[in-house]
Amino acid sequence: MDKSICVFGDSTAWGVWDTEKGGWVNRLWLSLAHGSEADNYFEIYNLSVSGGTTETILERFEKEAQARKANVIIFQTGGNDSSQDSKGNFKISPEKFSTNLKEIIVRAKAITNEIVFIGFKNVDEKMCHKRQVIKGEHKRCQEPFFGLPLFLSVISNPNFFKTLLVQLTLP
Image (cartoon, rainbow, N blue to C red; front, side, top):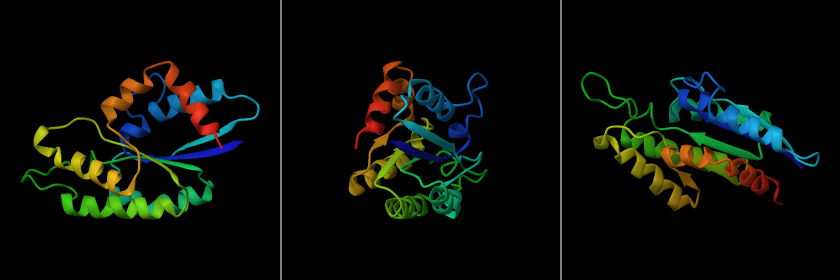
């Protein structure tokens, strides 16, 4: 069974600080490629862009996921949306962030039902309202949500990729 997995996110998903293996998306690919059996073929496309936001994802993810015939779409977003300028204004307002997230979910569901969201890394506690927006939208839309710290602890477990491989190969 072939699986096409598209990942959309920011510099963290792109792998900017991982000089050893190129970030968590590449580590996922390495693990799946190494552990794949002949019947299971995975294409993982890291379509993340440094500085990416929910708005930049909305601008391009549909065409890119459709071109790659995505079976699974993974989103990691929110960190750049919640960045602030010198006056304390968010790059993307909480209201616009919520609207963008809803639209991402609707459009992604038109492509595949296998959608995963990964929350952004911990930031200033005063800015946690975005994390609550993400969790709320995922719950409302019945989509899985993983906070990045949890996700990073999960993927550091050597059995994680074996488990994911099994889940991705299930009918």
